[in-house]
Length: 365
Image (cartoon, rainbow, N blue to C red):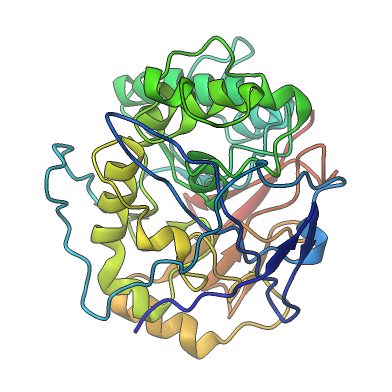
């Protein structure tokens, strides 16, 4: 069976993680009622100590405890979700003449703009200037910084501009997007908590029993909310040419699951599925695994995943790389979370994958 879960304990406002190569934390989450009745529960796990925020806020007061996280079924997840009307996104896209990957953005608009400019994607007025350039952003636009809404708005504007020019901006879902949809706001800054105060959202969410300060963010980012529906246009895993992209990486056991993982996550965000997707709660899944981010990588496991997906290369974010973007397994794996946001203070770096061999491009704030 794919997908084991690590569980930690919440005592008061202090999180007591289970110590290991990954740190597991499961908390109860705010009850979010959307489109009639929905209870969204999820886990926050898999964060190594170096990724912890300077001050980690507690879970929402009065949140119920999730007794058992969802598990991924042994059989492949179906690509369709009963009752969901969203058309599935194509997992595979043709090779691009020019292809650039950008890692975690974490609420830092200045870093986001700098990365997009380093990629040749936008001009000085934040308009698409990349022509047929394809940019893949590997998730985690949310949390840790104050500019989350501005980043989501910028991505939403650039997506059609890129398409009209013959290119593409492919933004993926990270664990922090799914955490916020479930009401887990422990990595939200004080300013970020109020960034969505005037955003439209389901009235039921605004009437929920969550603390008043959290209701607008829940209404915007909870399943069926205005920004959650925007995120529902994004996938968990994408393949461009001979390269697979995901926030944390795709283990071989997850290779048959990616169509179903993409669609279940999207339908849930859109408010058309009552249960959080398994990809959200499995610590070996494409938004949580740490198998590819550390100093030691099982290259045999990596190549098994690449073979199962019929690709040559994997690109991941999720785990900050103290030395910046780097490769492992003879270039079959690239780790692109350079920690370029304010909270980590890393360099502005993006990875150019085509034309020619992979190349790290540096930018300036």
